[in-house]
Image 1: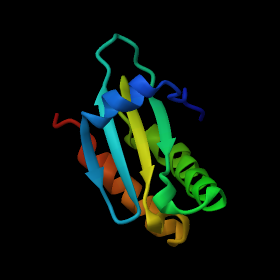
Image 2: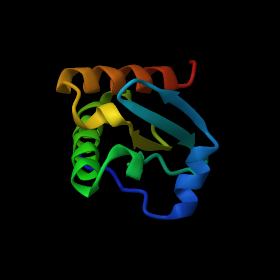
Image 3: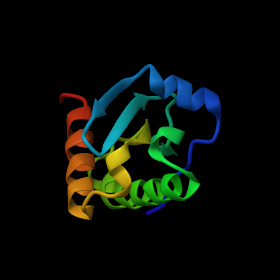
Length: 112
């Protein structure tokens, strides 16, 4: 499943003020848009502290695949999710990354 991608800086800044979950391999920010649109939008970022461009791109590719695998089941409609790479994102075992993303998405779900 493909999701619309956040591209505007203002969307990233709005998500920065929203709820977040920090895990050893990834930080996920979730913002409810409240605009009546039920699509899930996603954004990915990796700072230069993560490494050079090759390492940052690898981390973002891994986060993109984890998001594709888990957001259909654990994402909430009408939310923007921003995935922020950490140093461990590029080299951790795949299952460890999936577990961290899943736990973070579950914690970010609103209490029903």
